[in-house]
Every structure is written in C-alpha cells, then in structure tokens.
Length: 188
Picture 1 (cartoon, rainbow, N blue to C red):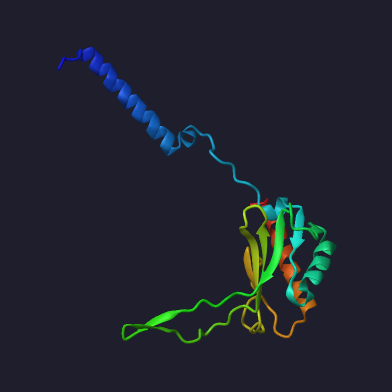
Picture 2: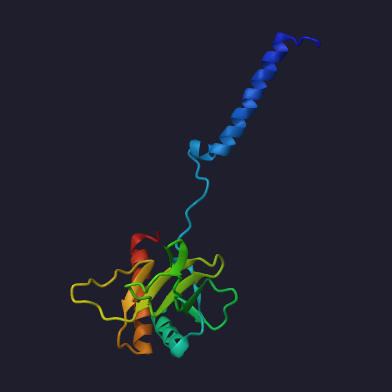
C-alpha cells in the first residue's frame, strides 16, 4: 500500500472535521445560534380568522348560535363549510370503557363517579383540524362554593334546566369572553 504524504493526510483530516462541524451545526439549529428565528409564532387563529361555519346540531342549537354569533359581528358566519377559517361543531363525548384485572381476567370497571358532559362544542381550525376552543356543557347546576369556570381554550358551562337557546347564548358568550381576553393579551 502506498504511503500518503503527511501534508495531504492533514488536509484531508481538516476537511473531514470541517464537514462534520457543518453537518452538526445544521442539525443543531445554526440559525438559532446566530440570533435568527427559525419559525415565527403565528397569531391565534381565533383572532385572525374571518369565516366561521356552524355545523348542523341537535335541537336547532346551530340556528341559535348563528344568530348570537352574527349579532356579535366578530366573524362572518357562512352556510358553506368549504374554504372557511374555522368550524363550530357539537358532539356528544363518548365514554371509554375501562378495564380492571380480576384474578387474571379483564373485567369492565364500575361507573365513574363524575358525569360526562351532556354535549361539547368546539371551534376547529378548518385547515389543520385542530381544536382552537372547546366548551363542555355539564348537565348539572353550579354549586354555591364553586367558581364560574374561566374563559379559556377549554372551559365549562353548567346547564341544568336550560333551554337550547339559553345554552347557545352561554356558548357564544364564553367564546366571546375568551376571544376578547386574547385580544387584550395581544393575540398570544
């Protein structure tokens, strides 16, 4: 085997180390090391969205929600789901079966102590299909010592003895409260 010139070997060695350093910098996020941002944080879709589609709901709840949201005026409520920014829909949460081991045999667990929500509403980003806001409507009264749930990305409404129009009004009010709080925070 022919021997290599030590000078050539040193240059190859240096080039190899430089190549490895470049690859590592690329993998570790060199833009962040030099003060550049790799991705800007986008504003909340609830603030920048304009078109909102309200999906059909049981009990005519969609009609009440459309009316309340149009009175608010923040979004243009449309009857066509194609090309909108967001979708407001309702669904009934399903109870997931839980199992326990009894003498090595799986058997269903007993009923949970807490109640499932009667219905949930969610504003979904039409493009990414990710929930932007969600409210659970609980079929019970608010306890005297229980605070009103804060407006947030996930909240609750106590709706025992409420009519569908009252529930729709509370859902729209909670959404309005949350979006207003986002606007005051600067859209974060």
